[in-house]
Amino acid sequence: MARFIIKRLSQFLPVIIGITFITFMLLYLVPGDPARIVAGRNATPEMLKAIRHDLGLDLPWYQQYFNYLWKLIHGDFGNSYRFRRPVIDILLDDAPKTARLAFMAIVIETIIGILAGVISAVKKYSFWDTLITLAALAGTSIPIYWLGIMLQYFFGLKLGLLPISGYGGFSYMILPSIALASSSTALVALMTRSSFLEVYQQDFVTTARAKGLPERRVIFVHVLRNAMIPVITVIGLDLASLMGGAILTETVFSWPGIGSTIFQAILMRDVPVVLGGTLFLAIVFVVINFIVDIFYALFDPRIRLEA
Image (tube, rainbow, N blue to C red):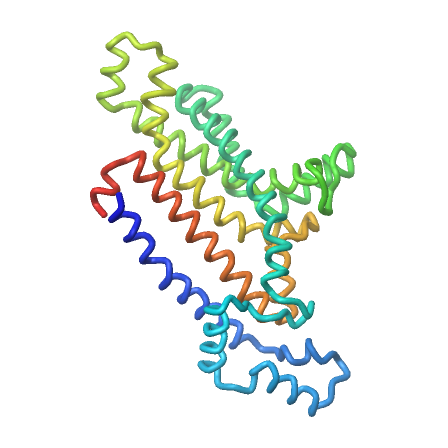
């Protein structure tokens, strides 16, 4: 197990460096002048030149990149051009808001997705199986932003049951978390059904049933535990992707999280915020992926033996 953990940890640094380099180059090649954002519309050429020099934007791209890496090593994510604040402060303010939304979506995805998948597998080829499969296919096909608008229209404007936008308590989280979890819930349901049916046909399940064990124990102890290995991977990686994939949801519902902050930073050419936000989400993704690998190895010893 220790060898497995060390091997996974050794992959962290190359991934982080690769992500920062790709993001930096994409932002470098995108047209636009960040100095104008800092100086404003009425800036003179002399002011723009001085700002570019102060920010290091007049240096070659490779020197700018290595300067950025050097600052990262010392824990400096830079300052936002738009907000005139340290990027790390902005991310620490916004990340918990996105984490709340992502965690709520994961709870919905896990409970509804696994339950629907198990029912669909147990009731194979029945009315419930067909209904759940069609609903899951629809969930993977409907765009999140369109579903979010429909939820706002019916539950917010028509019925007046829930707030349609803004940041607040639990009621403000319901609609955006449902929209955010829709596609992932459908995927988990389909994955659970497929994995459950595959395990359900194994010899050890037949042996357990032949020993006279109750069908409920066979399903939830013997079948479901072994069927959860690929599902755990999907759910774990979803938590990381939802942290960064909530841009559309946060925009539709005016939720002030890290996704909407990065989106606005891209529009405003606020390079330090985009780089810092991307790096932050990359670290979150790598850490969660590492945790998922550990659980995966615990459920299936063959994984750590192959490492």
